[in-house]
Image (cartoon, rainbow, N blue to C red; front, side, top):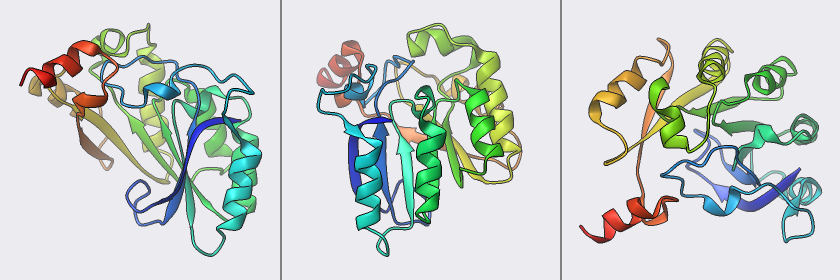
Amino acid sequence: MWFGGFQPFTLSDYPACVAAIAFAQGCNFRCRFCHNTTLLHAPVPGTGLMSDDFVVKELENRRGRLKGLVVSGGEPTLQEDLPHFLSRIKELGYKVKLDTNGSRPGVIQRLLKQELLDYVAMDVKSTMEGYAGLCGVPVSTNDIQASIALIAASGISHHFRTTFGAPFMTEEALMQIKSLIPPGSSHVIQTFKPEFALDPELRRGRQSQ
């Protein structure tokens, strides 16, 4: 796998777990409000990225100080080596949290079957009707709904999350999104950070306030 960033310590990204974060390079969405824009493009080895070996070595050196690893992005499920990488992390005795946009339910299902995940956080970006417009690319909402169902029924710790803010989402749309979250699953609302948004119009909106 290839990573565009590594954070050696976090208390806020993995609930009740002292963890590190590895940011997978590459994403299949182009969300208007994205704040990790340097991670969007597909990985090109030899361009300053970090390898899975680098992350594994970092975690080996932090045994006893950390309990888990958050694999975020970008979108981690795009990289074919993800299952092998996670198996290496589990062999070190770490818990694994996956952050995903839910676009690849087949990969999520495989990871769950192989018991490579301890926690999943899935972004529910929009209402089903609004996905393509907000994410900037065609999106299979069937895949999104399949991932929601898989994660909710997985039996492992999880939550769903939505970034809320004007002008790209209304309170009515947020309520529609909430209706997609199965009973018993947590839905976290994230605050929009316009200063880092991919869409320059959203950044300009902040500057004009």
